[in-house]
Length: 176
Image 1 (tube, rainbow, N blue to C red):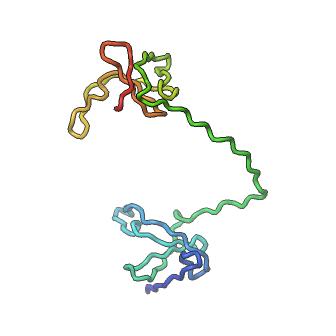
Image 2: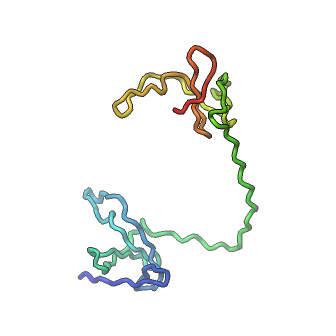
Image 3: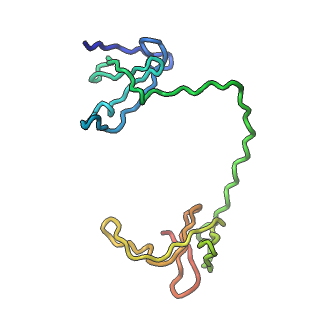
């Protein structure tokens, strides 16, 4: 026999458990699951969980009435142990200062040389840039992509790309 319940709202506008009176934890619906070789669509539905009573409530057909189910052991939230003492809060170090990034129009063509680790300093921000060796033409979304057919440097910090100027040892900032 199925019994349904109309859940009451607390002062915080959250549903409360009809058994213990504590606020229910809302859980969004998830992905479809396979249980015992069959598709389980119940996992896609949102639910209101009472961790104290180990039950959850699921609304029936947007009626405002909820059916009660036992909470599976895999979904029971473990309560963290209460601290025996008040932990000391360490002083937070000051946030790191942001590096100055030079405007792209202010960067002249520059000679860049790979060091032993295959990196070199970025002329724009000073971080270490990665060297990308030339590779074959790739097909991206059905179109040829020539962006990696020449050696170039990429900076992971400022996202700058420096490509070699043809016929020289100089590299120039590139928008792609």
